[in-house]
Structures are given as C-alpha cells and as structure tokens.
Length: 345
Image (cartoon, rainbow, N blue to C red):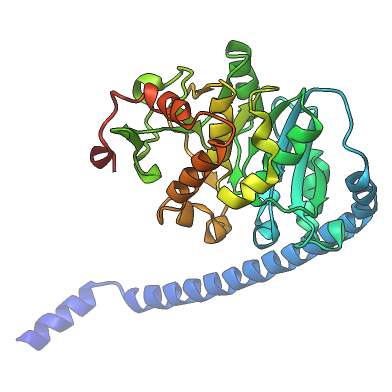
C-alpha cells in the first residue's frame, strides 16, 4: 500500500526537485567563484592604490621637510593642534582626512610628533599619512623634548600666544562642522574655554570624587560656564588666548606630575587663571578610528586610577605658586548638587 502511494505521489509531482537542487549547487558554485574573483580584484585594486599613494607621498616629502623646519611665526588666527606618536601613526590618516573636510578651515594646523619615534622626520611617516597631511593642509612638526599628549597644545600655544587654539585627539574622525561649531560658540563665550565633550568634577566632603565617577551628563551645567566642568580633548576643545596660567609651560612640572594627563593639567591651569569651561551640547558620539584604542591612555588613566594619582600630584605641585584650597573650592563649587560619588559610578 505504501509503495503504491509513493508511486502515485512520485508520478503526480513534476520531476524538477533534482534539477532545482542541481541548479542551486551550480549557482552557489558560480557565486563562490565570483566572490573569489571580486576579492582578488579588490586586492589588486588596493595594491595599485597603495603604489600610487606611495609614489605621491614620495613627491610630497621634500616639500614637507622644508616646511617642518621653517620657523614657527605668523599672524594670530585660529590654529588646530594635534599630537600623535609611533604606535598610533599608522591609524591617523582618517582623522587628518576629517580635518580636510571641515566646513570652516583653520588658519593653520599642526601635527606634533616626537622625534625619537620618527628619527628621519617626514621620511618615517606612512605614505597615506603624508598624503592626508598635504590634502588637509596640516603641518608636521617634530620635537626632541617629547611631552606625550601635552605636545598637542604645548608648542602651538607657546609659539602663538595671541591665537585661538583648538586641540584635537588623534584617534577620532571629527564631524565636518566641528571647527565651525566651536567658533560659533566662541563668539558667545569669548573668554571661556569651549569643549564639545566634558565631565562634571564631582566632590564629596572636602575632597574630589575619583575621576571615574565624574559624569558626562552635565545636567544644570550644560551650556553654563563653570569651574566644575572639565573638557575632554577627544571631543575637541577651543582655548582663547591667555586663558591659562603662565605655568602651563612648566615642562618639569608636567613630567613630575602628569605626563599622561594633559586634560587635568590644562584644567588646573585654567582655574588658576580664572577661566571657566563651557560645554554647550550633551555628550556627543565619538567616531573612534579602528585600531586606535589598542594603545589608548584611558585604560590606565580612567579605569586604573591614573588620573586621580596625577591630579593629586598636580594640586600639590601648583601649591608652590597658587592657593590649592582656592582651586579646590572653585572646582567643587558648581557641582555640590550633583550625585554623591557612589551614586555616580
């Protein structure tokens, strides 16, 4: 009986099942072959692009070498200043490209690099970085006195004290309107530091909460100049002329207290100078460049208490020429109504 039913069903169904299965197998095989070919062509195209980029970079290096050795002189203006170093350099081309796409261009832009990581100067830079520097009109500069992340502001502000300096980190693609936005906010708060991303300095009792507890949600301090707000460089920070105490260029002080915490050093120097920080927008999304976070400072500074140790050292150091208690009072002042340390973590 079952055999008869099977024969009936077999005769009733069109003999296409095997044909369809075979056709699917053929299509899958053809698709695999096509994918392999596309991958091969993509690799060949990438190789050709790399060769062309290398040839173009070779033609640009000579021009950049003379530029990198030229004196740091010029009229006051708006200057973008960035720093990088050896382990990060192969990833920064997208950041440079984002600078070249800004709706408002700075008067000048610098990329500061430690000479010990690049002993041959421009010749040691990857070809894509050389091309991105040229296209974005960013000047590479090499320093023997390496101050780590402090390089991004130290040399530019020292050479151009009357300029507006916008500092950026090297591990993010920046939105095309970043400089336009910061300049627009500068026209509102001319004498204050403007940050696109910031934290609230939380306090408890007479001291400060651990840095890890300082929230990115500014609450009532959003859009309000305050000593209790600290800009984080990764979002972009605008510094007007003369907004920092003159001791900001104390390289010995930097080395002995906070070689890996430029944001904290700048914050304390701004408080001493009587300059507040304003962040007009809520915490902004960050477009991190793939590969950059493998060598990021935040792992130690944020999650292992490095910032707390360095801030303590900074406050102790500046007590030699400033009132440490007054600095703490100012930093605590506007954040009294914010959550307690344990509530913020």
